[in-house]
Image 1 (cartoon, rainbow, N blue to C red):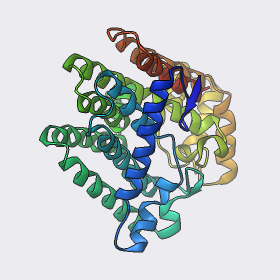
Image 2: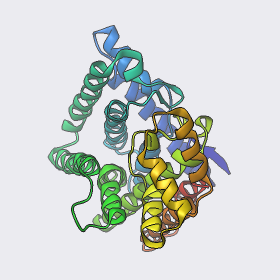
Image 3: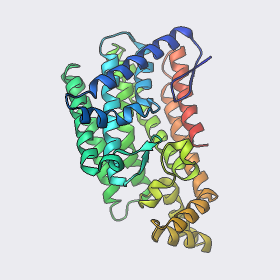
Image 4: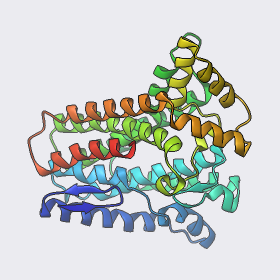
Length: 336
């Protein structure tokens, strides 16, 4: 049993391990090549997060999905580079929107170079992803465009908030399906599609990616509150400080509204106050870490991960399927 990649996936077959390791190494080289520019400053900014590392969750999913066809097909590695470049581009933009100071354990691009450079660098990465995508054919371009539309729509819906009468939790889960699930779904889809897998397999791995992506983001919500910066690679409570209503907070608000417990109402009032104050922010984090709402968010993470696992049931038993099932466990483990 060998651990593959920063995500910590255990692979029990030497041939699969070799394919995944080789594929991820090729993706890493492709990312560095795609982020080079004739302008040295652009190269430095564009490679800032590439060199900071990361789980390479989406490329890993591409490599595993490709095992259901020809994993050596020429479009597999470039499609993995496309999804990771797209993801990296969104991180540059997210950090500007969230005013984040740390990303993957290093100063965020907006802190190092300012918001304008961070936004433009994200745009540069989108352009490079599109350039690679054009060589993969019109169907790949259409799939990526639709996913990107869903991603942006999810981000806008998060900013706009739920419409009147809409359950905030349901709204938020729809946001995550667009903002995170869409690109993870494309990872599963591209891996299967580029490898020439059967259309039924492509559909299964697309659905799997959608659910796993949502579970992955829910685990991030839990980590934002429960972890320290060493575990998450970014400042704990960043979403909390920015007033972003992640799932633990939404569950807290729902419980406060339903039961009216004084401690819950007091904590909601604290969250509604000025969390740019370090003392108030630390107090809010401390209280949320022991609140049942955090455990409820963990259970939701497990539920989505189990739904992802269930979608795999029609696939033939093989080491790649077992690895995909273990990814579900790994996502749950991140949430504690």
